[in-house]
Image 1 (cartoon, rainbow, N blue to C red):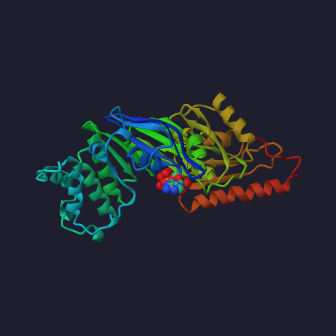
Image 2 (image 1 turned 90 degrees about the vertical axis):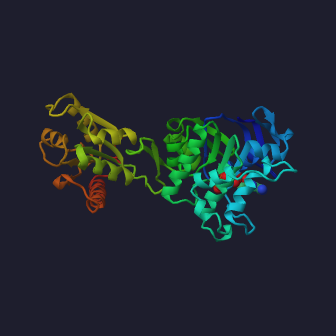
Image 3 (image 1 turned 135 degrees about the horizontal axis):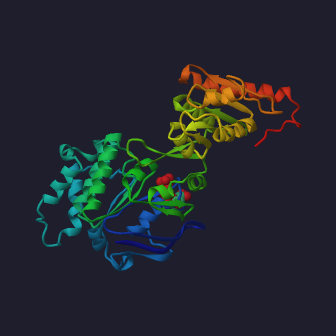
Length: 403
Ligand SMILES: Nc1ncnc2c1ncn2[C@@H]1O[C@H](COP(=O)(O)OP(=O)(O)OP(=O)(O)O)[C@@H](O)[C@H]1O
């Protein structure tokens, strides 16, 4: 078991880690996530003894790291470094055999080769065994260094960006392998930039920000927009991957802030496309009415957008009133051909427009029940142009946007 208590580390005057408390138990796969320079590599180096903490303590299975020989540490803990350049030209197999060094007694160098063979097989590097590491691709070298760590037969694994050089197939294979090793009873702590992969494979995420732990827990509790926005200094949208069922994070550094409210009336795919494109374009969006269970509802839930639901085929009523309240407050209303949109259109005596009192009404219609890639920018442009027109046609002071 890895345990870090109140660890701190500075470089010169700069404090890089502060008051870090962390434990990784056998059978746990923990991801260390956070922005560039957050201190992930430094923490891994403090844990494997390459750096001494200025304050605090690291223990392995209850034994202080500072009291263990480097050989004893290597029998318990193996590290797969971020920089895979090994600096000397050995064959891959020789590199992997180096993982056996902590287990060899000084008198007996006749270790059997099984752990090396097993490591070659598990990392799918057998075909690389006679190649010089210098000649391997970055991804191949990364797998060879993972094999060296496995040959070490440690209780715990530290991995610094283990998937950084890997193609999508090998990213998943390597993380599955680590997950298997963890299931066999090892502990693993990995610095991972890819939040989606971390959420998919790890039991727990530890979010480092400015050298402190900003959040830790199951992926769902750590990957929250507000926490990520603070740490990564960008707006994000956390949704659920429909295939893996785990959280997926999109950074939205390019999302402008238009400070205008647009209401989307209508569900189904046109509604989804309208909500998505207008939200991405930076508008404050509300939506509805849409039938409960409509795809617009789940999109809005994920983007924290207010949406009014009504049972399918329901006559105009209370739910529609709620939607109309939002629609009237909006500076623009987009009526789509999806379910619900027509209710707004009919209830407002117009097929395409809902008049927003005093705000110069604007509407864009998404025709044909489908918004394709070319129509999406057109929709945003149409709303923007009509908004500009609406604002121009009214005196600015009198018609400040209603929120
Ligand atoms: N040996 C060192 N001397 C001085 N500063 C250092 C040293 N090692 C790391 N730092 C600084 O400590 C901070 C944290 O670095 P670290 O490599 O731990 O971050 P990280 O979270 O792993 O970043 P990245 O995601 O970019 O790999 C950075 O500002 C870095 O410049």
